[in-house]
Image 1 (cartoon, rainbow, N blue to C red):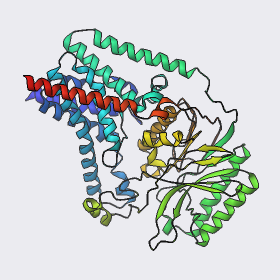
Image 2: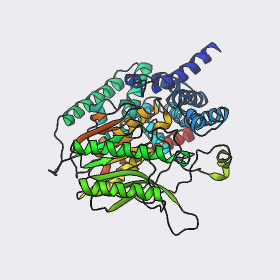
Image 3: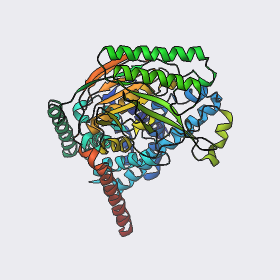
Length: 509
């Protein structure tokens, strides 16, 4: 019994250590050792025990990584705390199943292939991360590779494999170490160590290279952070207060223009704007913005809430709207909405949640990757939650975006680790596609990131900021941008091959 308690505790602590490698904890080196206890159990256990160990590790990982989740519906949606905690536990228990299934399959492979089965560890892990990206609505928030987002030399491999390649290296290194320890053979560990060092060397070489941009055109862009509280509900906010917030953002915009910015980014819905709405308040705001861009020649990218016309029941779109000096407008409608935030997925199952909270919106998803234009240059504008989906962001660049802009409202998460994690995810999108990325958040974290993931400027939480920097548009596509998740599909294929081989071996026993 004592031994069972020890290995159960070791598995749970393995997940906790992995979570500590992420912001705000930022103990990123933990990711290289955190999964060793779990893999030690998996490599020496039957499938049932491995499954339980994997689930406990996943529970510890997601429990700590996503500790901020219950606060949001309880504080902003008036959801009972007990129900918020229940939803939180169900979510992390579900996500932990991916770790459990991984451990179960890995133990099976090790059982039938004790000498070479460790090779499958990285491929199998990436397969589950990739499935998690798309399964049901998808939630690729805690991919292991993000723990190394500050390790710029290593993370450059993402321009080929996406973030999944970094996850592979982490798991392969840990599995090789465990294999060497259990079999008392040095080769697996030293081979994986050599691979890690080689990737670091390759990344260092890339970081010393100049930007590969055939475009000589350079311009200055600015992101605005107005520090608008998420506790403001626009339907109940006095007109005078809204007008004050609008003037505040205009003041910050003029400050950015005075610093030389030709493109200015406002956060996601930091001021209630709707260019398609006939209400007088919206028309007044629209006229004042049109006057600003016409007189100054600046282009504005705004977070708005646009409304369809000509329907008995109008549809609302979370929108990134680009207003040019010639008063032309382009709009991108957010396609991947936040479940239980902007809409209720699987309403037949979860309709009860809508009855106990006002926090769930009724937003209509967009249908295409629309690009904006700035002085003849195309750029893409994934909104908030969308930045966590590598393939979705990649398609903006594949369609011709020469730089990326993302607008978000992370004020829902207060001073928790969520805004830091979200910013780190955005950083990786810049590397994957080798594009400048400008991030404008209502209360932080805003920033400007170069195509190698170097943070040029970055704001703090809960502050008013104007961040400006010169931007180089880039046309050349990375391997990942051009071909997408080839690496992940290769991992899926090899994982399936390993599973088939175990079935053949079992049949021949």
